[in-house]
Amino acid sequence: MKRPRFPDGMEEFVRREALGRRDDVLTELVNKEFGTTYTLDQVRSFRRNRRIPNGIKPGQNYRNRKYTPEMIEYLRDHALGTGNEELAKLMTERFEMKFEPKHIKMIKGNRHISSGLTGRFEKGHVPANKGKHPPTVGRMAETQFQKGHKSINSATVGTVKKRDDGYLWIKWQEFHGRWNWLPLQKYIWELAYGEVPKGYMVTFKDGNKEHIALDNLEMISMQQNVRMNSSGLRQLQVDGIFETAKAVANLTIAIAEAKKRAK
Image 1 (cartoon, rainbow, N blue to C red):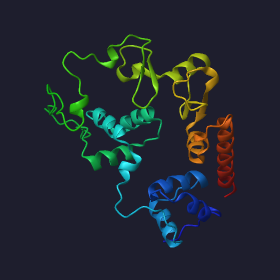
Image 2: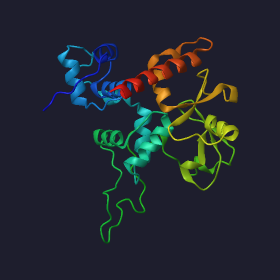
Image 3: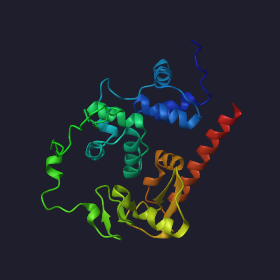
């Protein structure tokens, strides 16, 4: 099989980004940086052939590093009767971190989480959980609804609640289940400027999730958000750092696109 040709600057990039990252994460970063479609095996071989360490021990538990217990519990609570594509959308919106159906499938497989879906209904099929409450396991026993407990969706329209991740959510409509709620910053932005397009998000310039004010909100693309976070600039407590981080993100995106067009 013909060996792939790697772009100039890739070795320097991998040496800079590899430490502390597993090869699947590194593969995503490489493909975003250079506009490529390398596989996990290609990037792993590239790193190993050049003796670039990543500091990850063989067999290290990657899923506990990337996916928090809150993420796993949220997935477990919403998996029953929900397909991987829908779960990926829910997880992406809930944690503002891009999830694909393949990620959901991997997480469920590693943790033995079942959706109860087979992909088809057999003639005369009766759901195994019909008329039954899902079994209480693990931390669900601590957080399950008690008798007489009111669902979050019983709140009136306009109710604002703070979730465990620190974000404020508002109930803006009725009768649509989980879609009754929106992140408050997104709701405020859309009231002023219209719908947030797919692939974009509303973020806080000062990093304060409770500072809900139009002059502190800005809509950025998911791509910009990834670049801004990876630069490490947003974590600095310096005035104007948001605009600096955004400019750096735009520059790196433009360079990657220019390299892609030049091929």
